[in-house]
Length: 437
Image 1 (cartoon, rainbow, N blue to C red):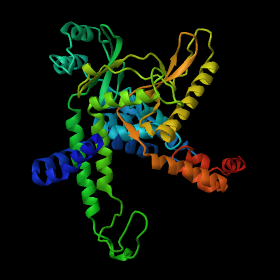
Image 2 (image 1 turned 180 degrees about the vertical axis):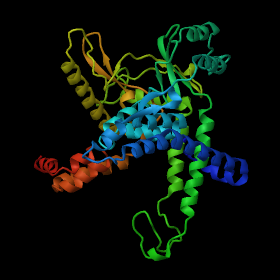
Image 3 (image 1 turned 90 degrees about the vertical axis):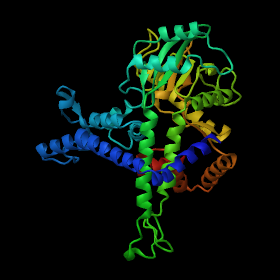
Image 4 (image 1 turned 90 degrees about the horizontal axis):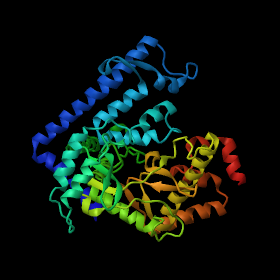
């Protein structure tokens, strides 16, 4: 129901655009702003660098990996030297959550983009430039002062929470940033505070993207391609050049961002996830992970307070003990990655409730007092529900193709689901090994 409401909220924007010329102007202003940032901070320095070197990236000169690693002086940053990849990441960060999402998606796919670019974009997950902590404190006090969700929030507890906030955030992402604090009677907690003005920015991006999508869908079919009814373009019995439902896709994408903008949704998602998979009281027989407890009386649209979880990212190569070697730490991390994969598959195929954003910043390796480690989840802004018939169809499809030994079909399906990287599927040796298996 919540997703339906969010989609309807986004769908209403085109009609608002038609009624209010000011919003059309806002979309135009946003387009100019985006062009200025990408052109001035990314394209101009990169094109200048290419012109000076007079060398387009090829295998002989290091290709795109060396291209994105190439550094130039950044006049806006005191003349510091930054790479092309860092320029792009900084530009996306400046443009806000909508474009940061694209960067995060690419940053988690080093098999698709060069590693140097993926590493720079990975910083968009939880290492962005934070906003002023004093502003964050004002937001917390403004949201929670006199706030009542059925349980009174004592003023002394609120003052204790604010006074114990870390001086700077421990993580900063596109929508909000996280502080560590102490809540009387609860212990250490994580306090997530939404960036001021972020909702307005997303609304402007939605107006712009829907305007572009509507325009592209309105382009008439080309007379020379009549009768072609395949792929992206469709002209048979249609006056549209582009067959893809761009407006619907944009509405769906933006509705997911709007869902993340209300931290009450994340609190509800976290509770749902914990009821299924938490090692405390989860009902799942296959998945048992650490899920932080949410303190609902302290959660608003812009504030989220939950239990603090100590841990390290699965991408951090560091030992968890004084006698642990780097090799053992790597082996331990890889074991946690396997647990994460098994957990995701179980969420997808068994329970049908899936953490929809399991990137490196949202998965933790947690050390126990007995020396063992376990997996922990963070950030529940996006939770997906997979209907039972879809799960059954997926399992039956894979099983049927395996029994028929249709390796190509299985490989293609796994590739579409991104369970196997495309470069492995394109390797004849790897496909032969899959066939033998």
